[in-house]
Each structure stands twice: as C-alpha cells, then as structure tokens.
Length: 109
Image (cartoon, rainbow, N blue to C red):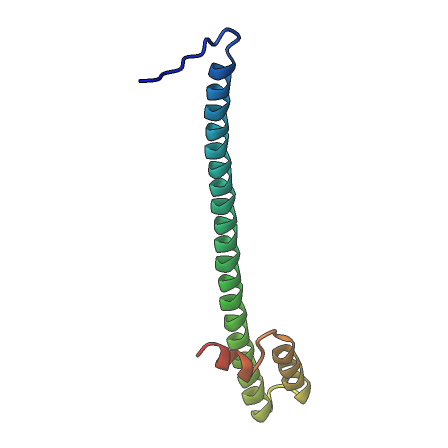
C-alpha cells in the first residue's frame, strides 16, 4: 500500500477548494440572474400583448360606431333632415378609422 500526504503549510489546497466552491456559487448566481431577466422579459412581452389586444378591441369598436354613424347620416340625408355634407363627413370619419369599414368587420371574425 502506497499513500502520499502533503502538508498544506501555506493553505494552497484549502484555497483551491474554496476557489472552486466560490466559482460554483458564482455559476448558480449567474443562472439566477438569467432567470430573473427571462421572467422580466416574459412579463413585459405579456403586458405588451395584452395592451395591443385592448387597442385592437377599441379600434374595432370605434369602426363599428363609425359605421353606425354613417348609416344614421345616410338615413337622415334620405329623410331630408341633413345635407349631403354630413354623409360625406361620416364616410371620411369611417375611412380615417384604422380598421375602417369592412376591414374592421373582417378583422373581428
């Protein structure tokens, strides 16, 4: 049986072990930092998606209201209550709506 033993007078072996342990702990903390960053990015993306979904819903509702306004303006024009200008303005409002007219109806299906 052959065994060797080294006296660690200056603590070289102990410091090497401590350094390895510190490196391991640093790796764990790096991993945790990446997870925190990932969770933050996912949360930001989720809030962006939800905000955009809400904007789309508002735009669709606005397009529907503009279409109803146009129908009312046409009915009032045909009844002789308002001038053709009201119909043209209602058409322009509908066209200026981001999901104006039929495009908004198709987007909602």
